[in-house]
Image (cartoon, rainbow, N blue to C red; front, side, top):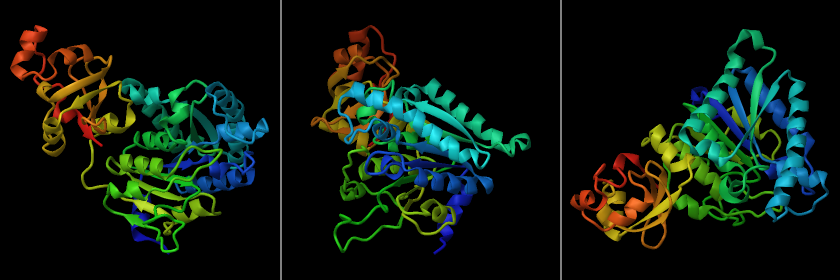
Length: 387
């Protein structure tokens, strides 16, 4: 059934970012499923013919490498993971290029790490690169030579990212989508969408539309384990939240089903659609909360948690009971409660060494202790984003 809401979302999106997971792209033996990739390329091309700008975020380098090296299980040692990814990435992009070439579409390979999007100036450079690539498709001179950027995590040089950061590229896809003004992020995996309970339960029902985000959704997430993939529903929900609280909409759907993308592009009720929230975050707060990685942490007492989280007040030194890390002023830090649970993130006005000296002190004591008082607040409320 065609959905008016989904049609409006498609029409209002300036860029569609499609993320395809490892389990969609590879067979159970780890080899690339070229037939499935051919279908995906065909579906994406049809949407490009409608004048839509598309970016593809593709997992599968490790899976492709496993197939090329005849490995039955995903390596656990980091150097071996990086080596397998290096073998697989070339095969992955070559396969995409082969099928897109039949439509006259040129592939632009973009390999990223968390650091590329964590530092503000590099974040902006990446955004400009994507926008320039997609502008080629607006030029009549290149009408028969359209470009689609294909993004993957740079596994061969990353360390923490390869282990945990992106979660099978779900977070990477949300970061890429967040570069654009009004994106639609489509997360394709081996799940139909978000269910109201464990999908193995016969009474489970697929939630087709999410109009308002609820933290309860995270408790509904049932992780599926795979030898080839490290993503799961929880990582997809975190990715979805970062976009709908910012500037776009998200669809989570089953990429294992033939024609899923075509049905989504035809505005049919496929998967779960998460609609943009009425209380949106500024680009700056999206970057603080979702794009960058904290360089340390500040632990708050109960009173400071209530004041900052519930009353949205700035963090003062008197409410700080602990500092971890060697961060400098102006860097993003995690804000933790006394149990070590992250309640938010923020840009700190003081370096870790200075906060150690003034923690637990009153504001009027800062000048005496540090010999200066650049700010009354350790983290200003305008530079906070809550989890």
